[in-house]
Image (cartoon, rainbow, N blue to C red; front, side):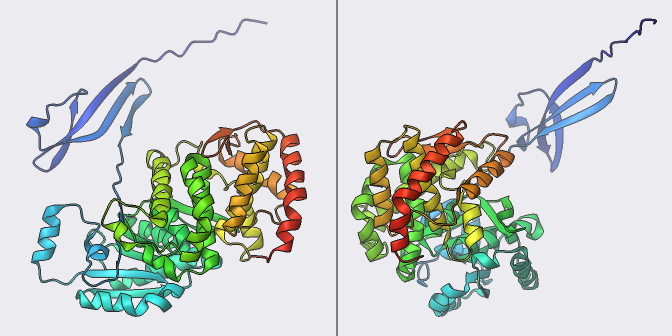
Length: 455
């Protein structure tokens, strides 16, 4: 046989970096990394990299996307003398001055959870009318069962009929996490991104859903399978809304607060150990003066630590480019469990059951002492959270972890506590440890959980 000659395909490539500058309203590219900003109206942070070879030309565009949003505590959001709900999102002083000078009424589209509307509807209407706002209030049953694309489309139809200005008239969402998620997705779709404002009315949404960038709806029997990473233009927090939340829903929110305590903040865990029952009893209603001075009572201290630690984890990783996320603690098994038994478990309850099992995994792995494990479980029980569920089977756990591998770059990325207020990511927890932890979890907690009232 003759020899086959393989010709090497060597191509030369010329790469050039361009900056982008604006002169008299027109953007143009300028050669080089450094550009004298004084010579141009504006210099963009974006770059264009041009590569020329024998095969042709390619352009690589690098465009930094910066989102700025405010999370603001404001007591009495629905007090007509408080303009935060309408103007608190504005950061440009000239825009604020122009709005206050004009006689044109403000225009706002408000989506509010149906149950929240029953309590606060008259007060919300009175507020908008007192401030001469042209408004539309859409009250919807924003429950987990209704968290669908159909509801997002219903919102979009109403928004379109209302004809708001997508740049200056943000959509306002008032309700729990489901409401904030659906409205956020609808806003991100309308005119390719309309600003929106979140006003959480449950403890869970106050410290979790409201402060991040995620929006979404359930799809194909999976939780939040459709969604986008588009943060609100602002979040307004008013603890007085929590006073009308049922006790079970306070516990529900405490699960997410406990999550942040376990993975990041020992002092918060100790605060929940000591004051958790009181926070439940008082529905986080403390001294109102905390909004006006540096002293923090237990409700304000707990919520501020929870929000601060959550923002520390979310802000550098808003689009979840880094899949190693401590805030995923309690969220490896809970989505499947929550959807399986819907609507019998609230989100935070499912998360806590997940966390309780993972605490046993940590202890079985030698990461937690027996005493630490018992303290954590005792704290969960004192917060009136479920720590075990008969539908959280070993089969469901295995399937959830297999699904996790598919969507997390081939690694399970399991956050586990390594002490009180500390956690790390693990990828090699063996099936033997998972099974031993499961058996011990069931042996120690199943009977006590069954003796309590089902959630």
